[in-house]
Amino acid sequence: MEEKDCIFCKIIRGEVPSQKLYEDDKVYAFRDINPVAPVHILIIPKKHIVGIQTLEEEDECLVGHMFTVAKKIAQQEGIAPDEDLNRGYRLVFNVGKDAGQTVFHLHLHLIGGRQMSWPPG
Image 1: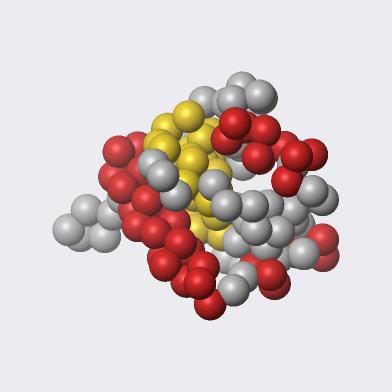
Image 2: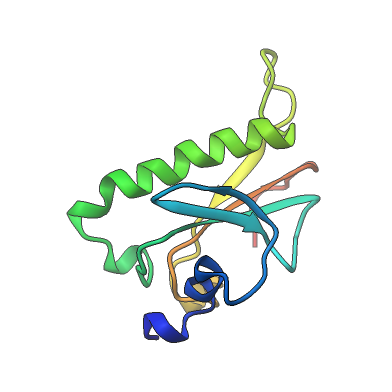
């Protein structure tokens, strides 16, 4: 999919509305419109990257930044673990159709606000 047709690129450009929670020069974070938990946030790079399979070495810092932003948002949303490790959240990248990736723009799911089960999916 080309960048001009990508729904996440359109969200970043403000062409499609979203519930923005965080934005900086590298990433944009917003609430998922089909949440699977009380807190379900997508963290997306502003650079159009199809998915993990197309990452370049130059993207390593960007992906690390996505995790740092996830930590900040989890704290802001009140789902980050306390000193006794109560609470918590899950971070997920779906890679390819068989894994459930439906939007082919790299995105990190931040999911929490309820007890998670294992194994997922």
